[in-house]
Image 1: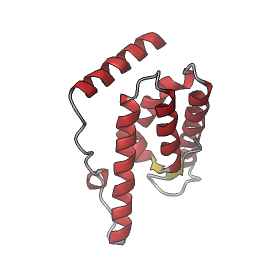
Image 2: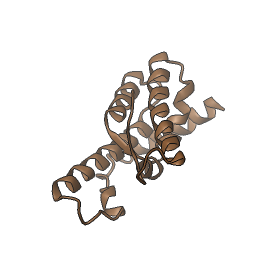
Image 3: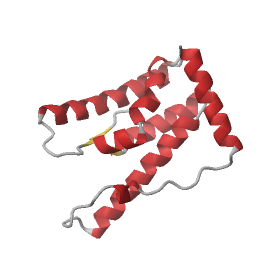
Image 4: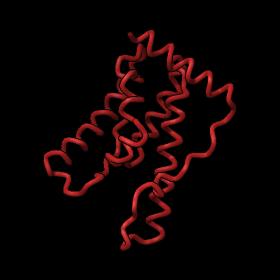
Amino acid sequence: VMDEQRGRLFSFASSLMQAGPPPPPTSLATLRPVEASTEPQEQAASSVTDNELATLAARLEATPPEDVAALVEVLQELGRLHVTTDLLRELRLGILTRGLVEHPDRTVRTSVRRLRTSWKKLVLELATGAGGVEGGVASGGA
């Protein structure tokens, strides 16, 4: 099953590389309504983070499993950014990282498990009401 997933991921990454560089990501901030009380600076910061997350998600998807250094770099960058449950769903970050939990390299496994654990805590906090706000925010621990 893992070889099949790697094969699909590798062929997808190869097709991305042959197609040329990806277009710049669309700001996900435009996909969600922004509260009227939000300051323009906060809106700009939010869209930058959304764009960074979208760019990192695309990089993670395009990185071959053999490129351990690039995988660890992307996972660590994902861990430094704040992520909302909405963004986790929109960018399919859980799906993108699921296959890396059993990666042959220990550093990749550790990084992705920390990251996914922080995201799971966020989702559980929101599900139990401890998070308080919808679309809660978490920063990863990669």
